[in-house]
Image (cartoon, rainbow, N blue to C red):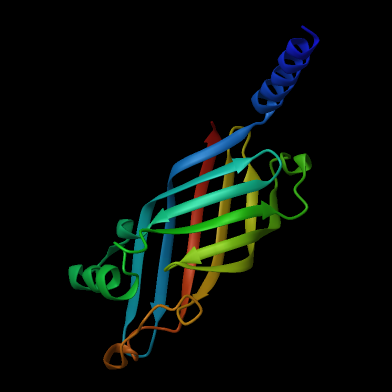
Length: 181
């Protein structure tokens, strides 16, 4: 009987802790990338990024690689088949926590924060610290971030014949609004 009470109390404590943990989510965040070279600029947009932010600053974001749209269909085909190998590596992810997370961020002001975690692209996971802007608008978190991705660091193959057309450093821009879950 005493063991049953302990189990019941422990279950209630875990459940109350879970219920009090606020989370925010998005399923339509925007990720854009830009590759600038002397020969050609390449850009693509993906509006299918999903993300989760917990009230302790932990986060997880996922971007389906097949969701990137290009100006030219042939660029999109090469991107998915030859470079990012989308069927083999269907998602890019970033998981971690915001350094120095604080409830004081909910003051309606923009705050520059450091998102620390593991960025995985093309199956290669790299520890990163990415500066971002975080703003509470009264109902949702608005996240903005700009950073670069090195193609060599993620072992993204670029054939010699197109090396002049694809930058070794890709600019990435992220815009998300995370609403209560």
